[in-house]
Image (cartoon, rainbow, N blue to C red; front, side, top):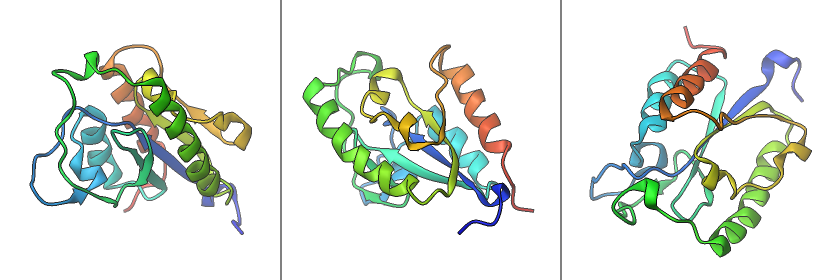
Length: 160
Protein backbone atom coordinates (compact mmCIF):
# COMPACT_ATOMS: atom_id res chain seq x y z
CA UNK A 1 0.00 0.00 0.00
CA UNK A 2 1.22 3.50 -0.78
CA UNK A 3 2.14 5.64 2.17
CA UNK A 4 1.28 9.09 0.81
CA UNK A 5 0.23 11.06 -2.24
CA UNK A 6 3.92 11.62 -2.90
CA UNK A 7 4.21 7.91 -3.67
CA UNK A 8 1.66 8.09 -6.49
CA UNK A 9 2.88 7.83 -10.05
CA UNK A 10 1.55 9.23 -13.30
CA UNK A 11 0.67 7.26 -16.40
CA UNK A 12 1.50 8.55 -19.88
CA UNK A 13 -0.29 6.99 -22.85
CA UNK A 14 1.29 7.77 -26.23
CA UNK A 15 -0.75 7.27 -29.39
CA UNK A 16 0.56 5.68 -32.57
CA UNK A 17 2.89 7.69 -34.78
CA UNK A 18 3.24 7.87 -38.57
CA UNK A 19 6.92 8.60 -38.10
CA UNK A 20 8.89 5.57 -36.93
CA UNK A 21 12.40 4.25 -36.84
CA UNK A 22 13.12 1.87 -39.69
CA UNK A 23 15.68 -0.34 -37.89
CA UNK A 24 15.12 -3.88 -39.20
CA UNK A 25 15.26 -5.61 -35.81
CA UNK A 26 12.68 -5.29 -33.05
CA UNK A 27 12.84 -2.10 -30.95
CA UNK A 28 11.15 -1.19 -27.70
CA UNK A 29 7.79 0.46 -28.45
CA UNK A 30 8.92 3.82 -27.08
CA UNK A 31 11.93 3.70 -29.42
CA UNK A 32 10.13 2.34 -32.50
CA UNK A 33 7.76 5.30 -32.89
CA UNK A 34 9.43 8.63 -33.50
CA UNK A 35 6.76 11.32 -33.76
CA UNK A 36 6.79 14.62 -31.90
CA UNK A 37 5.20 13.31 -28.70
CA UNK A 38 7.66 10.41 -28.60
CA UNK A 39 10.65 12.70 -29.00
CA UNK A 40 9.38 15.00 -26.23
CA UNK A 41 8.62 12.02 -23.98
CA UNK A 42 12.01 10.36 -24.48
CA UNK A 43 13.82 13.62 -23.74
CA UNK A 44 11.99 14.49 -20.53
CA UNK A 45 11.32 10.99 -19.20
CA UNK A 46 15.08 10.51 -18.75
CA UNK A 47 14.87 12.64 -15.61
CA UNK A 48 11.36 11.69 -14.48
CA UNK A 49 11.03 8.99 -11.89
CA UNK A 50 7.29 9.01 -11.34
CA UNK A 51 5.92 8.33 -14.85
CA UNK A 52 5.01 4.97 -16.34
CA UNK A 53 4.28 4.72 -20.06
CA UNK A 54 1.87 2.77 -22.25
CA UNK A 55 2.13 2.83 -26.05
CA UNK A 56 -0.76 2.54 -28.50
CA UNK A 57 0.16 0.43 -31.51
CA UNK A 58 -1.24 0.84 -35.02
CA UNK A 59 -4.11 -1.53 -34.17
CA UNK A 60 -5.00 0.91 -31.33
CA UNK A 61 -4.22 -1.57 -28.55
CA UNK A 62 -1.94 -0.71 -25.65
CA UNK A 63 1.40 -2.27 -24.79
CA UNK A 64 4.10 -1.51 -22.25
CA UNK A 65 6.83 0.89 -23.42
CA UNK A 66 9.42 -1.90 -23.36
CA UNK A 67 7.43 -4.26 -25.61
CA UNK A 68 9.53 -5.17 -28.63
CA UNK A 69 7.93 -4.15 -31.92
CA UNK A 70 9.10 -5.03 -35.44
CA UNK A 71 9.20 -2.35 -38.09
CA UNK A 72 5.89 -2.00 -39.92
CA UNK A 73 5.57 0.83 -42.41
CA UNK A 74 2.78 3.29 -41.68
CA UNK A 75 -0.39 3.02 -43.73
CA UNK A 76 -1.14 5.70 -46.31
CA UNK A 77 0.79 8.74 -47.44
CA UNK A 78 0.27 10.87 -44.34
CA UNK A 79 -1.10 10.43 -40.85
CA UNK A 80 -3.67 13.20 -41.24
CA UNK A 81 -5.41 11.24 -44.00
CA UNK A 82 -5.22 7.94 -42.11
CA UNK A 83 -8.68 6.61 -41.26
CA UNK A 84 -9.50 4.41 -38.33
CA UNK A 85 -12.21 1.78 -38.98
CA UNK A 86 -14.99 1.85 -36.37
CA UNK A 87 -14.78 -1.92 -35.84
CA UNK A 88 -11.06 -1.59 -35.01
CA UNK A 89 -11.88 1.15 -32.49
CA UNK A 90 -14.51 -1.04 -30.80
CA UNK A 91 -12.23 -4.08 -30.64
CA UNK A 92 -9.33 -2.01 -29.29
CA UNK A 93 -11.58 -0.31 -26.73
CA UNK A 94 -12.43 -3.70 -25.18
CA UNK A 95 -8.78 -4.75 -25.06
CA UNK A 96 -7.68 -1.37 -23.68
CA UNK A 97 -10.35 -1.44 -20.98
CA UNK A 98 -8.85 -4.67 -19.64
CA UNK A 99 -5.30 -3.32 -19.77
CA UNK A 100 -6.18 0.04 -18.19
CA UNK A 101 -8.38 -1.52 -15.51
CA UNK A 102 -5.54 -3.81 -14.52
CA UNK A 103 -3.00 -0.99 -14.54
CA UNK A 104 -5.16 1.51 -12.65
CA UNK A 105 -6.79 -0.81 -10.10
CA UNK A 106 -3.64 -0.72 -7.98
CA UNK A 107 -4.38 2.89 -7.05
CA UNK A 108 -0.73 3.76 -7.84
CA UNK A 109 -1.59 6.54 -10.29
CA UNK A 110 -2.79 10.07 -9.64
CA UNK A 111 -3.13 11.08 -13.31
CA UNK A 112 -3.26 9.74 -16.84
CA UNK A 113 -2.02 11.90 -19.73
CA UNK A 114 -3.28 11.01 -23.21
CA UNK A 115 -0.80 12.20 -25.86
CA UNK A 116 -2.67 11.51 -29.08
CA UNK A 117 -5.29 12.81 -31.46
CA UNK A 118 -9.02 12.63 -30.83
CA UNK A 119 -9.60 9.79 -33.27
CA UNK A 120 -7.16 7.53 -31.40
CA UNK A 121 -8.58 8.52 -28.00
CA UNK A 122 -11.85 6.95 -29.15
CA UNK A 123 -10.15 3.57 -28.59
CA UNK A 124 -10.24 4.21 -24.84
CA UNK A 125 -12.99 3.07 -22.52
CA UNK A 126 -14.66 5.56 -20.21
CA UNK A 127 -11.70 5.84 -17.83
CA UNK A 128 -13.34 8.65 -15.87
CA UNK A 129 -15.09 5.99 -13.79
CA UNK A 130 -11.74 4.59 -12.70
CA UNK A 131 -11.24 7.45 -10.24
CA UNK A 132 -8.11 8.96 -11.77
CA UNK A 133 -7.59 12.42 -13.24
CA UNK A 134 -7.31 12.34 -17.04
CA UNK A 135 -5.30 15.04 -18.83
CA UNK A 136 -6.12 15.22 -22.53
CA UNK A 137 -5.14 18.41 -24.37
CA UNK A 138 -7.66 18.11 -27.19
CA UNK A 139 -7.41 21.61 -28.66
CA UNK A 140 -4.60 23.36 -30.47
CA UNK A 141 -2.10 21.85 -32.82
CA UNK A 142 0.80 19.50 -32.16
CA UNK A 143 3.03 22.28 -30.75
CA UNK A 144 0.77 23.28 -27.83
CA UNK A 145 0.01 19.62 -27.11
CA UNK A 146 3.74 18.76 -27.06
CA UNK A 147 4.35 21.71 -24.71
CA UNK A 148 1.57 20.47 -22.42
CA UNK A 149 3.21 17.01 -22.40
CA UNK A 150 6.62 18.47 -21.57
CA UNK A 151 5.20 20.52 -18.68
CA UNK A 152 3.18 17.57 -17.38
CA UNK A 153 6.27 15.34 -17.24
CA UNK A 154 8.40 18.08 -15.66
CA UNK A 155 5.83 18.72 -12.90
CA UNK A 156 6.68 15.37 -11.36
CA UNK A 157 9.57 14.10 -9.29
CA UNK A 158 12.92 14.06 -11.04
CA UNK A 159 16.02 11.96 -10.61
CA UNK A 160 18.86 13.97 -9.14
